[in-house]
Length: 431
Image 1: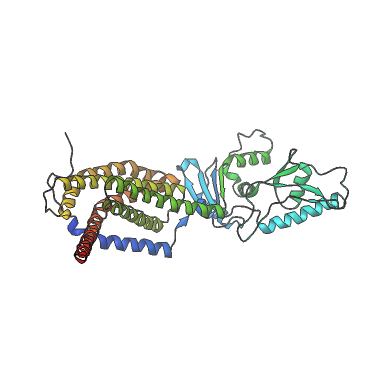
Image 2: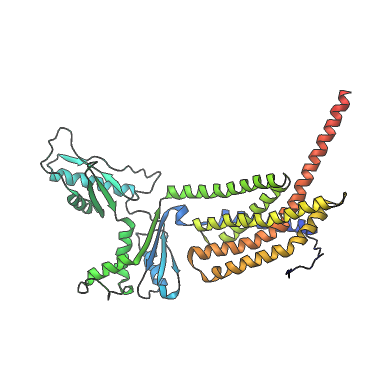
């Protein structure tokens, strides 16, 4: 037994309401543009650059305390704190614009102090050779590991002993840079691993959140400081750092990926149907993305790689609805009597597919809405965007793609008529 939500032979006048629908959708698109210009998207660390830190406390910690301590700490810029998981997890994601404690100015200061230390220990014979470049106009500092080398100054005699990794590490610490230093025999240089933001986070946790850690399972129960350090180190589940230059590239790539998806849809529909259908479908998808984007900005949802995946999923979902309706339109055009207007054929096709369209959307929403309500973090954001987008995509497949099909059909017929008239005039002139 086949279930249908809409009775057979139902004939809702969708095409008669297309001008009203265009007006409403136009206002929504304009609102999305205004929101983008006035409020602007809330870029995540993946797109704007920054650091994302996932923490897990072993004892209950007040969310407001976590937020207040990180926000008030001058070492972290533009901080946001989000609790993830359930109440018993005591798990937080802290995001900050800070990507490194080693900016270009500090890097130059460290080099100056390091040169002074080397010169002092070698009676002026040694200096820094290889050293990382840092341009403050294009980057905020050094992220990740870098190499340095120690060389003999020109005209000086090499000392009997050169500093080893441990000595160089002490020099870095004296220059106010906490780092792990190791020596590479093959290249005769030192690998420097700044502890950076992670060390700053651990210091904050030790000084402000000691009560949030259970020290009963410590490997050295008698040493309180060791136990706290061990618990703090274990509490940092993940740290992801993205520089501003990389974030900008991610933004560009995300926009390009959505545009490429739309262009491929345009090509696919043009091949499967004809040129009238392709731009109508792509415009419908673009409207879906634009309106959903406006709602995302209005709700203050953070734009991450997961939200970009949600928008790409919407493009795929929206084209599925449109393709089914267009397929029915093409069948009905072939079966219709000569003289029947395309508007009536399209309206009948929408009504014939209406039950399928509604059931498909409801079924998808049944799976997604619980995640939007119960999930946290990136999963929640993805589900919220999909919930909003599916509702918009369903309406757009009816009120945008099909009416736009009529518009492009009229444009193409007018062009064909003009071409025919021009050809007739040219033939008459030839005679």
